[in-house]
Length: 250
Image 1: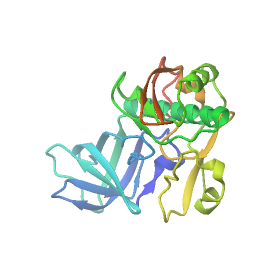
Image 2 (image 1 turned 180 degrees about the horizontal axis):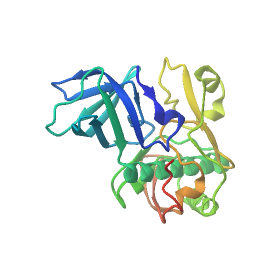
Image 3 (image 1 turned 90 degrees about the vertical axis):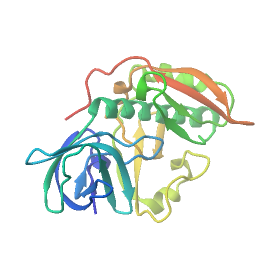
Image 4 (image 1 turned 60 degrees about the vertical axis):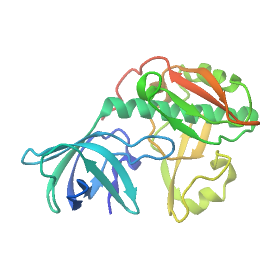
């Protein structure tokens, strides 16, 4: 098993762990704990570096979740760590923090659309277009970007606390319809716990991804365009307008 540090505290950017398994052919290692996010909820996996105590280092090029384990694929040419080796992982924090801010912005947009229009989001994706990871697309079910504009105005001053969220029994989340804000329930079958994320005011839902500690860290949000995805389904594209007061690390 790999302890998912990111699920409890998304501000952790550097950690120490022990390798429990490796694949030399695939240049992948499995640590017993990690702060690297493996991707999901529309958010890409983290990048960064894993380094051994004796100085061997490899850039983390991919992070994937396989059951209860999280595999880290390493680039470079240094021999990779083996079972029992202590390693230090360090996330590319500038990239991750932009993704955290954008992912939280998508929660804001999703919450305002659900509250004002009663529409559920059909999907969301963060991508590298427009200001790198700051640009994002999020699906919605009704035409027009009005709710997105309202979200931008409401959140410029901060909507209140946000954070990594509490882990609760998945059965309770499945039984509470308003906690599933997507048109189709995207939570994997068989999970025993799910994170409930609350942005006080606009949003309370079950969700993956990593989130900032307060919506003030998101900065301004602007809807810069929309793309038709079929009848009653339009995809707005958002960008973040300005930077947060800090970098979100502890």
